[in-house]
Structures are given as structure tokens and as C-alpha cells.
Image (tube, rainbow, N blue to C red; front, side, top):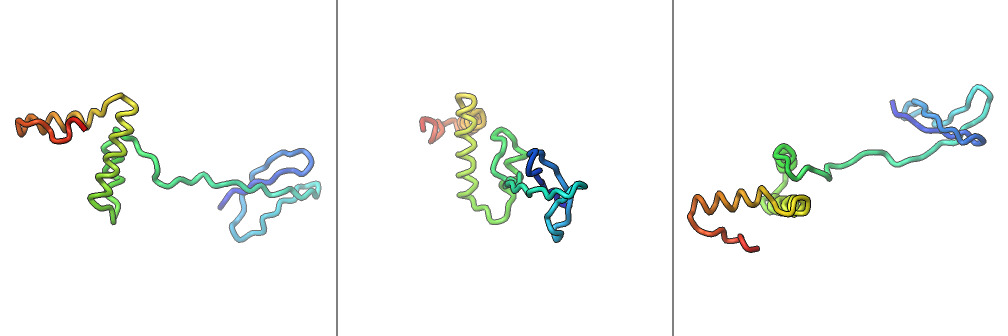
Length: 113
């Protein structure tokens, strides 16, 4: 059952009351004083933040249905920029470049970008 907040009209004290969603959202105390309902924004969030260093967060985010290869590339770029801002360089990107150069014995095509 949801929690609703009510404020005393004179003292300003706020009280949390558990009520059903279909109940009338009115609170009257034992003295007969009707308290004012306080409306607030819910603390819900939609998968907006993720740790740029976490493989688990990457897998959870990219496992969504409907995510295209281009969406994954865009997300990868965003996370790379976050890592670069926080550490001055992106260790994931550097490792990828080093692995590519070791495997192919050529300079990475995007090394200077």
C-alpha cells in the first residue's frame, strides 16, 4: 500500500500515512483537524545512469530488445568519453588499441582520433 504525506495546517508537521490507492486521501487526527495533503514527485528513475567501468552494467544495458549495433556503438562512445573525463585517458580504449596492434602488427586506424 502506498504512503501519502499530510501536513498539519497550523504546526507544519508532516506525517506519513499508509492508505490504499482507491481510498479517499484525507487525514483527520484525533482532535478533528483535517491535515493538508502534500504532493511530491516520486523517486523513480529509469535506467539512466551506469558505471562506465562496469562490464555487468554494459551487458545489462545492451541486452535490451530493440537495441541496434549503432545504438551499442553510440553507448560505447559515451562511456569512453566518461572514462576519459574521469581518468584523463580511457583504459578500455587503450587496451583495445594495444590488442589490435599486437594482433595485426599495424597501427590502429583510429589511434590518433
